Length: 206
Image 1 (cartoon, helix red, strand yellow):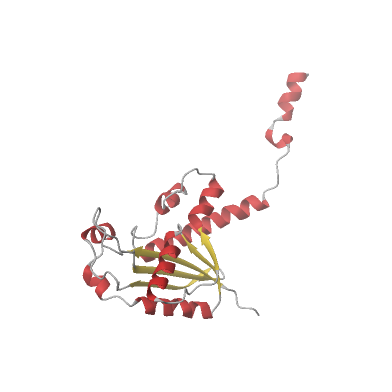
Image 2: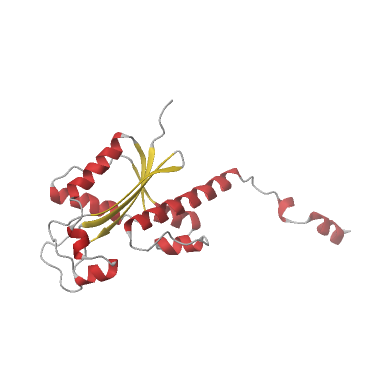
């Protein structure tokens, strides 16, 4: 029996400069990672960690306030290379899709790999769920993660801007969208008789 490939839901939080005071050469670094691994519709693994930035190791006050994160937390985090090692381990089990909300997570991961001279770990299909959501519902603007789940009448998991909670919320929305897609695929097109009460029409013509 062929082993089903994994769906991997990822959310990163990044370092950020102070407003109007961007250090020379600054680039966002991954400082927190949340990962949800799904196989055969079941969550088989979750991974949550802080990641110690190396190029700009000191967090700005803006970053700490926005993410509710402390310097001690990231100082005690894993190295970026250890994070890549974890992703390479997932690759060895086969990944069908890597799903994120928005495209920044993969952009920053690619840039961090380039900056550190590390090979990008994924070869799987990438899904920007925010764009799928936008196309599916016909929204003109891109919807935020937690607004999207609230539009489904649900609540996000845990706390917004906590990487694992956002990854779990992304997985939750993915399931809801896929369920709606299957429903629409199975729905038979209506005939004019389904949309109009013909008996009333006949009575009017009688």
